[in-house]
Length: 257
Image (cartoon, rainbow, N blue to C red; front, top):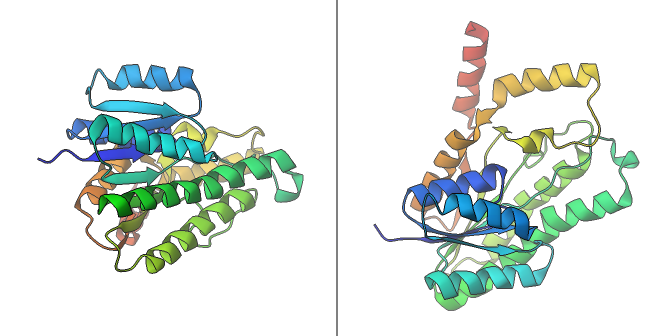
């Protein structure tokens, strides 16, 4: 098996960490990224018990120098980059849009949209010089246009990810780079609980109902996404875990139970 080199942003927790772990289990080489050196070093220490083919770069994805450092680290350590995953993202406070503070609006859009754009641009320019590579951007709620109260800001950023990825793939037709979207669905991670305002009893009841139907364990989802990325050979690809048939199956199981 040819060892692939993979860069995953925002990979010290949640789905990002799950992707990294699965790639390492399969014998590949990974560069991780996190916002704080303390957390990054802690995760690296744990991952190195699994494989020595892992290194990391600390930095925020809304800073262009972070992406350049990821390229430099990958090349100096492993000599190439086969797959780049723009995974970093942050949730919005559990509030209506008009009640969200300006600093939160700026932080979320800078990470979820601007940071992803920086990563795509940096990775694509490197891969053009290298002559090959795949870039995958992480979807989330709102990517397909669905709406929910108190998710307007987050959903808008993920809808932008969908449009941006498709549009850039169109611009890059004929180039030796593949671009795609990862659609994990609802995953059981602390990302879903990361809210600074508690839900009302009615909101919590509704959330639990949806969570029970749709949520899946992170290791199941990440294994599926990693397998899809490794075998993908399309100029544009969308790797979707919660497909129509899978959703139907979950609903049927719930009704039977």
